[in-house]
Length: 143
Image (tube, rainbow, N blue to C red; front, side):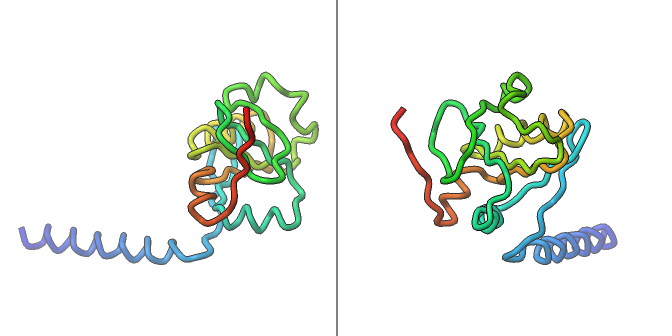
């Protein structure tokens, strides 16, 4: 019984140490496998840095309209990505960043884009909620 308790104590310590090391203030983006490709999760601070020298298409995929991040290029519902190829960049290696209110719709949209063959897809983790929580401004336009 003591050996089992010791095993779990060591396991818990290892997990805690691993979490502490990976939760620094500037974590690296993590590539997430999608059904036929990958996309990368990014934090609000990473997106904010990217916006300083914007070289990507920023897509709000949230429905219904909630708000938006400045410099948003497109509004495509997360579940209509495949039905709107004319709005998407023609180049499959074009950099695309998707976001929604909480991150769940954009996660699905990022997976869909990766599945369509886009190779440079980014997803804002936590969506507009996380963006605002980090002190960044949202634009709210009347609908």
